Length: 500
Image 1 (cartoon, rainbow, N blue to C red):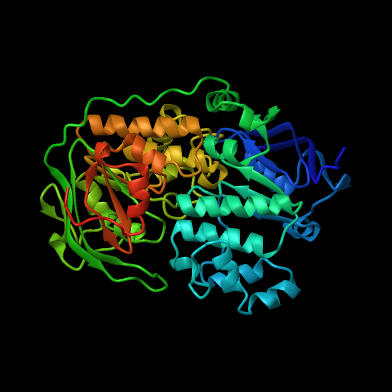
Image 2 (image 1 turned 90 degrees about the vertical axis):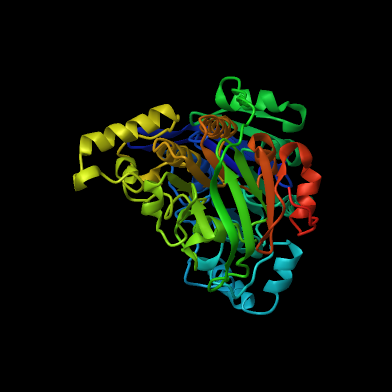
């Protein structure tokens, strides 16, 4: 038998109030693309951090090429030939792309990274990055590509990818798959963590399923149906999203008129004459490849960035272009950013304290019990797995933190909700729950603007759709008028001139 490249035996890891891994196991062969599947909080990220030396297990053994190894840090793992792209980024925002790549490499390779070979590497993997751009000025999707570039630059023997395609376009995703298959053909191993069951069935040779911290199955995903995979992951069948009543769009709730915003420092694309009308009682989707102006649009709509003219943005007919986020919330607009830690939540604050970010206390008084009760209600109603309502935001998995953020904003009963990448890194069960919450909100008569790079998500929940490319926005069309193929062409700016 082939000696496993990486083997984890009986791994156990406890946190206060949480058993993250419970004698979990994983075996990855040379030249294999191996998926690790599980719902949010199942212990996938913790298991991978242990494999990479970022965490120490409380019990169990890590073996590399058949030999037991003790990994005191990621440096030890990298010295063996491992590379990892984390779901939550580990980048220096004040440094450039090239500098961040160099910092992730051994000294000899880091010197080489300063040479012109970095640009061809970016082109080879179709990562569409400017080596001289500062990471702090990049979108979430672009930052994920920097992490991927840094890992690939070290030429690893085993590459761990945690939700690598969450914010990649279809073309970029297929380019990544080609790269991963080439790595496997060269005898390298890939550990692929994803909630996208179709991707796992298309790409991976084997799949290890985790549930509640334990390994419950090892199987061939290509011979297993998506419903069966989902049931193994969740321990039950996945609830189907109910489409709700037919959308009955009402008055214009949020509008943008001829909005132009210059590209900020380090940005390549601003907004160019963007006009858009969102109506009450509908979900309007905005598709596009990351970095084409979606982040700027979200910032202007949420109030993070103000417009030059007050009437460039209107909420229920009222000019709000120069109002900040707090003033817009008072008028009924709430926003959920794509970046969870740092923008959506303060990492070291408890969930109860994070409730305050978008629901400040009336009269200026803080009532700790009320805050804790509010956070506990969100945790219960939206299926958030947390040690307690006071658990720090950083202690939650990405998907559970996303559930909390969605619940926090929906509890504010918005008349207009602007949300970016709501199911990025979220398991199939949680994604269905979030989609249902957005549909239910729409059915109350609220207006939802959904900015996403997930084509399946947009086609599943939206009533109307538009595409952003190069800072411009396409005509708006109904769901029935457009196909996934047409949207893909529009992402390259190839739309007609007829308005919907």
